Length: 397
Image (cartoon, rainbow, N blue to C red):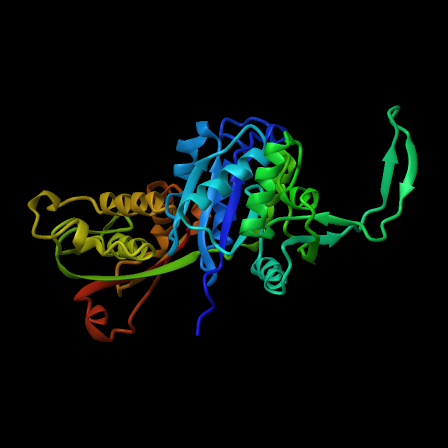
């Protein structure tokens, strides 16, 4: 039997984040790390939790467009709602709680900083476990590891602060929903507006705050350096999306004076028969590139029944496939073509072929391989009835 949905997450995202600098991308919660806004990472940390009842994101009134862009593409089985915040963090938290109270109040409220994108499931579950055990307020925290110094107004160290019993506060901080809403209302009625976190509001209201285990990785992004380190952290953890595509093509040989392979005309007593220039190498390589993003094959894009492609240089097809790959976010890492033919000799033309592939694809020649083999006079290629090509492409997405 599944656990009941007992908590609503409140993500505070109304701050301006001045210490992170102004890059033109908006406040720090909308800066991108790992390809997504920081806020999107914070929201995603809660999505999929079996006990989540909904998410309320408290945003600055001027940030609606930034917010809509940040959540684009997020899939959620529970409501994700945005409400305008106030002039202080405390006021914004109260605004989120009041908005949820007007509709349907969950049993628990978990209030989280939008600038903490690395929240893990264990931290959430630790807060919920403490609430389930009867705590009214729960603070996830980690023991302070650094030596602490108190500095005087002149910039000199006044004394060393003992670390025993000191913990660094994190979020999400968890509460009995009704209790934290009442505490926020009471603080506002008393004219108090300088609480820096919600556990401080609960303490002022007379509630004991239990500690749950925090996580060393659950850091808050404050400065531009923090954001840069977060980007590096995600990049290091990212599994590379390297895809490999294969292509195969064959055309029969008929009387003629040259064959075109990898875009290079090679004198020969035969020619390749086909609707276009019948360049088996570029046809196979076009299919290999299209395969890396599941974009069909060359016939889907350039049907042989269409007269506009009659006699067309196959470099057009390959360049088209390269554009499709680029538009899908791909970077061509290397391509490899193997030609299977008894004649003509490929060796004298290999460098020119590689240069041509390099120019068409816009990659270094060291990433373009061309080689050839015979079929030991076996089969249709061995009888010089046709030429076949096998191509492989590796693309990073």
